[in-house]
Image 1 (spheres, rainbow, N blue to C red):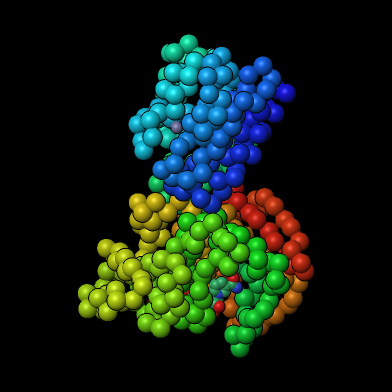
Image 2: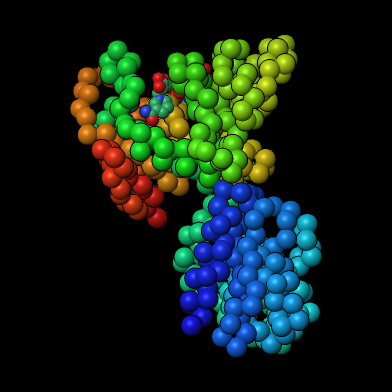
Length: 362
Ligand code: NDP
Ligand code: ZN
């Protein structure tokens, strides 16, 4: 086997932690000596040992003179656990192969430098794009201090989310709806506008069997209009954060805090998307799944502050000038202002079409 093959194994190990390592990255490590894998490990939860620690522990004394494959540059600073670079040095490994360097500009390269200074051979960039894709959320979060934002909607082929009378159940089928729950499980938080909460009273939970976690539910609600009877503030199935503008009175907020919801007040009258994302980043929300409605999607699009779009289209035509669209808001006036996307993935789910797009660079 070659470096790439072992790195593939390390990446597969890393992937096992999907949805459960936030705010940490997904990392896998494999220790190889004389063509044999003698240790492997993955980082599975923040605060728990790093991948290298598990892998080196498994290899034991045999780690001496081995090659260690790790999907992310070993850490060089004292966090919740001691630096992995030190562990690799004290274990006397001969060679370290890395897929991606640390994305944090302040620490990038330091782990590698430490290893090199100790006389360890270092190869970096093996399966680099695969490693960066696996940790796209972490890389974005570390570099921008804001969550990776995915906008999601489901509608008819002609872009409607309900009929003119407001009927919307069901446009897409079971497979598409199940797919949404898979996304919910992988995200730190789900976001919806207060109108969606008022009109649909959604529970915004992940309803897979044994989900790894329940995402935080976030409601954008400038004037605190969320009904006190809403499921998200009563069911206790996950945390709920209601974001309000600066104008809501302390009395009103106090009445809500008896409910199972946290009220977070912005210091501006309206909720600005960029400030919101910074605030969520400070609270270690690394990934945000925006589920609408149209007005909220409109604001995110206008701000340009999103990374991906997941759109489910049912082969159905609803029509009607006044039937609600997937995206509302003011929109753009010129085609040159419109946001161009690149199709990353298409899939048929049951009878529906799923399209995943990313923003075009530049
Ligand atoms: P939204 O759910 O998008 O909520 C909009 C409200 O959120 C605004 O009126 C505003 O009220 C509040 N808000 C606070 N800050 C912002 C901000 N920065 N940008 C935008 N809104 C903000 O309302 P819609 O009426 O557009 O959509 C609701 C409908 O969408 C529902 O009927 C639901 O069924 C449907 N829907 C469909 C989905 C689909 O995929 N098919 C997904 C989700 C919803 P205020 O000023 O009081 O704060
Ligand atoms: Zn480490």
